[in-house]
Amino acid sequence: MSITFAFLARAVEPHGFRCGVIPNVIDIRLYPFRLRRAIAPRFFWMRSFHPVYNPLMAVKVLERLRATHPEATLVMGGQDKGMQAEVERYAPRSWPRRRGAPPELPRYGAKTA
Image 1 (spheres, helix red, strand yellow):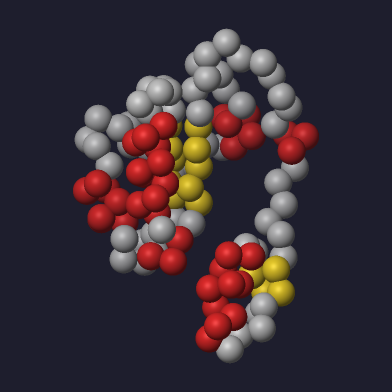
Image 2: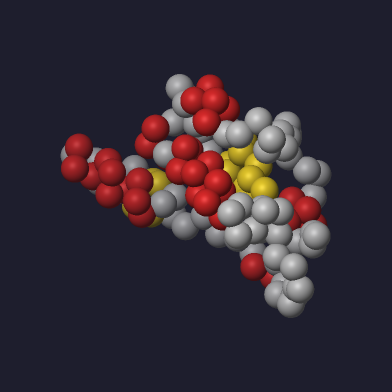
């Protein structure tokens, strides 16, 4: 079985599956370093809303991060596999909602506040 993340391989190998990890490669040249005076972290969650991916953890991490970086944002996208409603109930209503992906993800991710 081919899997993109080692943690997924570790999760299924105890059930008798042999796994090969194929890395999910991101071209870091699309995200050049720039020194910023203000930090506004932007996170993207592109996974199924399934318990194995623990989508609530992403929301809880953002909640903690916003205590020190109130401009931090999280965009989540993926198929509902049983947890999307729970994630939406947990996320504070004050958080901005976004539907769909921006047309040029690298440029969007590199925007500064």
